[in-house]
Length: 217
Image 1 (cartoon, helix red, strand yellow):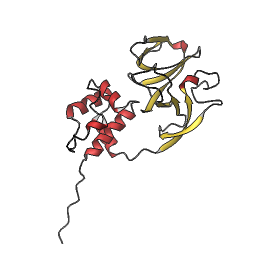
Image 2: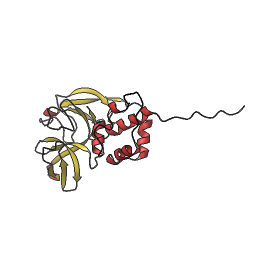
Image 3: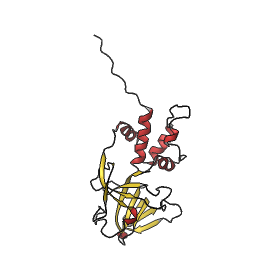
Image 4: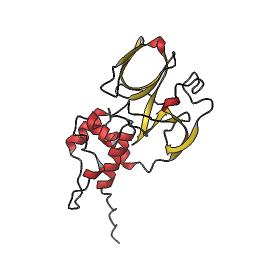
């Protein structure tokens, strides 16, 4: 009996777009935020653009994909892994309003959630037992984050240039910024809102810094 050939796995429209969503998510961005960081029209990766008005599937171009990978310092191998990933498991994490994040006793010296006032919320797993969620209040972080957005912060995830981070100073200030540069002597931070000034902190002023790994928008 002739041996039957194995069925070939076909790359689908849904898999590619899901992988792009995961790429954005793991960089703490929405699809539109990823497009903007990649130097593309902010609507390039929007879900409303994935199907044409006459019902045809619209695929991301190789150019836009390449720019998205470059903007997140990701390889094509990493993108292929995202295509193969199954659904992300949920993780119950402590949640607090960002407006209360600077309150005394909210975090311990390592930047882990501490004290009272935290509730629990189930969100995509950050693979970090110390991960927590902060709910944005107000519009001081627009256009990156808006009132009601929830960010997941992972103290255990390595931080790279260009990542969005939560920083607490030894004076008690808590801020959300983008990491521009980090040296042994200073931390250079870019404001998410273009109307706000960037910040440079001496290393001794920083109590802790943690990466934003996911945002609900």
